[in-house]
Image (tube, rainbow, N blue to C red; front, top):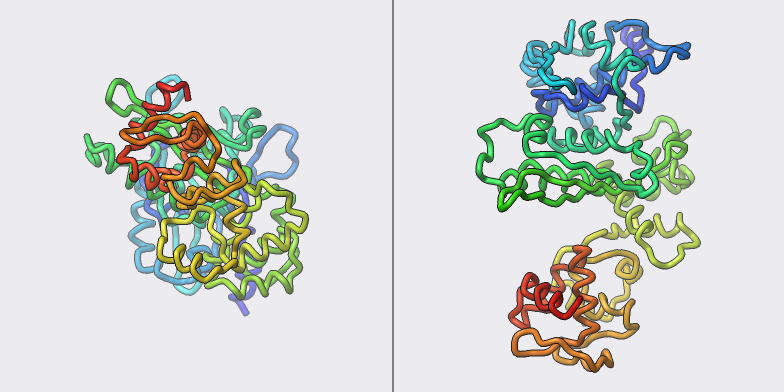
Length: 441
């Protein structure tokens, strides 16, 4: 009976969290468990945004999260409990390092108290000195609002921090209009904000890109509705920064976030928020392996819909088919399955190929929308009915085909297919670009 009362008196964990921008950019020495505990604490706060606010937290209070809720937030298992004391001990002693705009540094402890009682729950109490950064935000030099649902889908601290840094620019008017976010970060800024040790990946930029950027970005692109890419910025031959671009066209609007379905999992609630009836949402979920798989399918289905060049009248029917058949936004090379599909004449998921970019589509499929005909083999470019040709090596390629290829290369689309095609000409993409530029392409 006491446990039930305790559960009922637990604070409400809000879906949105707020941090002042100096704290968001600060260096935090967190592993994934520590990161989630910090985010859970932020979810329990009701910040003061302006002098006109009537309802807000006037001070930090002790917050309680029952073990059942904590376990749910950690993916439904208790693996985190084995390291919880060690993690909380480190968090209690750790300081966050803030860089003020005018230089120097500021160091702050995060918590006044961290306490865990087995089979009961976790108590969190923030340090009072943190008030200007998470509570009294009307006094801060800007703050950022983030839907914490997306952060909790990630398992890498680098992925969480990178997504936070990019979302800091989400309310810039131009970026909202373009439905994309751009931010340039120097390697020094990334090391500081992502807490990458100075000795790690030193003079090994490829390893830095793989472990600090590529792997975390792959996780963001797979598990959230955001799509991130980046380009290296060089000074001479040395990489000094990276410019990130994050597409936000696939992020649900705020008015679609709420769902009336109760006593159900987040995936079903998300399906309902897209417009599906609860019965249909449960039927769709039954086709998925688990909640994580369902979220991945939902994200990919929405991306397929967003990229469709043909008008989609029945969007719910389109999304349902895409989720249930697990359509892929980018399909990796799979020549055996492609041959098998051609051999059997199978037409399943043909709509999938028409509706999104595919990194290993055949050259014929790439050109179909441009020329309305298939290109059987590289040696028969004359089927494109183009008289003008360009020499690449000892062979020739039609001017129109070269023009199409260079367009997709610059957009970084279909690169695997184009490389495969150029291999028959013993030509690299770089050399091909050089030849095309000489012909004014």
